[in-house]
Amino acid sequence: MCAALLRLGARYNEIMDEDRMLEETYRLSKENNRMLHAMRRSAFIGGVVKLMVWIVLLVVLPLWLYSTYLAPVLEQMRETMDQVQGANASVQAQFGALQGLADRFDPREYFKQN
Image 1 (tube, rainbow, N blue to C red):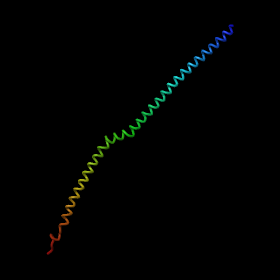
Image 2 (cartoon, rainbow, N blue to C red):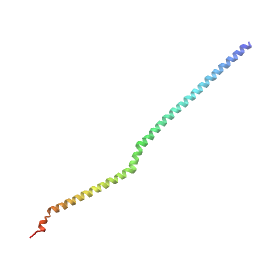
Image 3 (cartoon, helix red, strand yellow):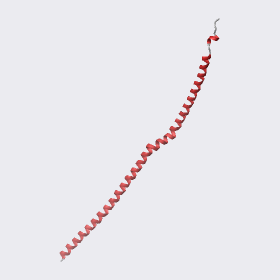
Image 4 (spheres, helix red, strand yellow):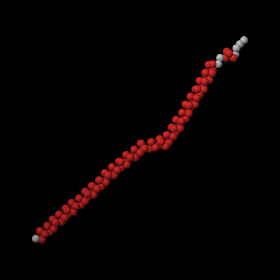
């Protein structure tokens, strides 16, 4: 009977060890699942942040640089070109008037040889 009790006690210990192992396995699997979900969430958030950084670098930054630095310079260049074209038109008009005077001037009238 003593041997039967010892075998029963050993069997009880084996059953308890199996239960503890199952509980430990269950705990580890839940912990692993939480870590995997956290890793996926971090990867997703990192991807979204990376996408936003690229959008800022490729779209927002060039627009800001253009509006801050390039637009005023281009506006000044356009105004200067308009002034040059206006001066060119004025010079052409004056030259046209001078050409008209030259066409009406006949040097033979003033330098007649008698």
